[in-house]
Amino acid sequence: MIRKGVKTVAALALLGAVAVLVVNAFPALVGADYSFVVMSGSMEPTIPVGSVVFVQDVSAADVEEGDVITFSKGPRTVPTTHRAIEVHRSDVGVRFVTKGDANEDRDPEPVYRSDLVGKVTLKIPYVGYLSAFASSRAGWFVMIVLPCSLLVLSEMWELWKAGTRNEEHT
Image (cartoon, rainbow, N blue to C red; front, side, top):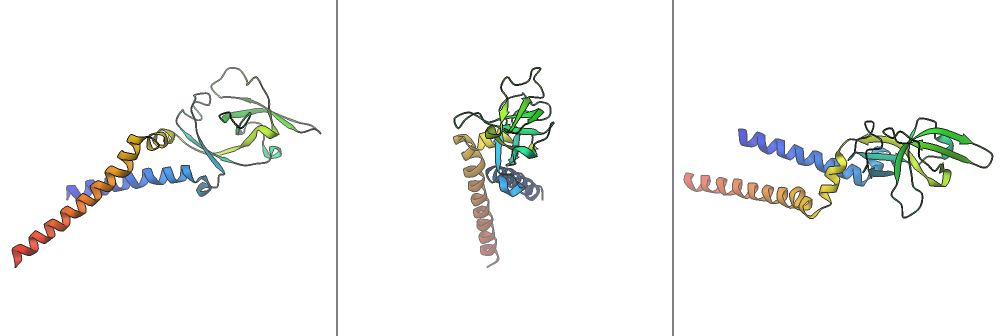
């Protein structure tokens, strides 16, 4: 009975981990366009390091003061997620003054409409660590190869036990 409970809990844990990784890989499942792993503490405690943020592509006109946005200053730069603390609208366009919640100073450069990736719509704390681990060789082994191997061995064991019981009864 205990063995069956352990197998059930292990299967549920594996299923939960896989579900989280699938959502991270396919952000559209939660209505987002992008997902990013937060690598710095600039948004703590609102968004802890290692969290996954889901970002929806929005028009710059839809961003309000206080929204958490993700922006990138170029194709080769790592996206940043900070809070828009000021929104400046003009005939020429929109620009945002941003700041990380944990930072004392606001960001030195404004964020322009062309820099905007989108607005954060969902965050899952610490799941980024799982995602990073799953991307490693050890993570692939621990999260894919090992559970599949244990499942196959467990089923083979059950078949062997069933076969030996049948031989005893004949």
